[in-house]
Length: 237
Ligand SMILES: NC(=O)c1ccc[n+]([C@@H]2O[C@H](COP(=O)([O-])OP(=O)(O)OC[C@H]3O[C@@H](n4cnc5c(N)ncnc54)[C@H](O)[C@@H]3O)[C@@H](O)[C@H]2O)c1
Image (cartoon, rainbow, N blue to C red; front, side):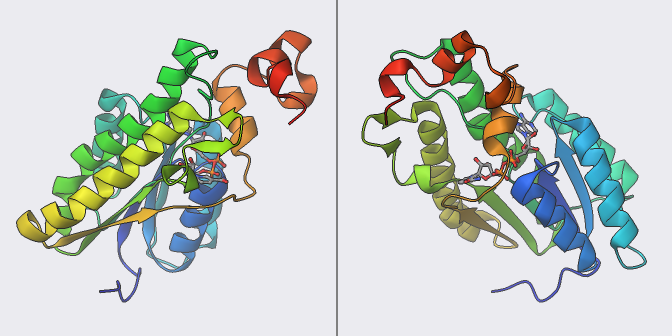
């Protein structure tokens, strides 16, 4: 059953500062939907929120919030902030979109990068479901949209090119979301859930993910930094 209209709804978008999340904020607001967007990059999401709000029809409110979705306390603070900012006791749509790449090899990569990638891409989705499901139920017609990836089907970028932390997390997001379909039907039929499995989309995810790891854009990397990201043995591929 499709949602007839976004007008007068309230949507939550994580990772709203760039790429697909930014586009969601822009398009939802343009269609009359109020939006609370969060991002690790507070400046970027503040600019997007202000721009989308300025272009939106009357009555729409768009707010930007700083939040690291891998930290449950920050997700709960984001939830409380947005309910106050939008004077609401429910939300109608939640797009758990925030994500990053990294943790390519379990064998040769750094453990902290693997665990950081998994935490953002899996625990970020999980904490948002925990925080926002009661508010989607309070809507009476709520929709949760979790973003997985083509790497939720295929656990590598290609022959000889592992993508282990990202793939593990994206498989988990797909499995969790599919499990929720039946759980919601049985226990909270007023909420529906969908999983998004994008193929390659030309966003800034590579540069954003490197920045989140404290690395510069590829053209500004030292030889040691290039070696960390793309080991010499893999470079010919
Ligand atoms: N671009 C692709 O080809 C592609 C393919 C499949 C799936 N995806 C998934 O789509 C989603 C959106 O990706 P995108 O391509 O728009 O990337 P993007 O980098 O353009 O946007 C992602 C946003 O999430 C934010 N973010 C990262 N970690 C965060 C955290 N811990 N807390 C809050 N915000 C955080 C980033 O700052 C960024 O603004 C991600 O989940 C990604 O894994 C992307």
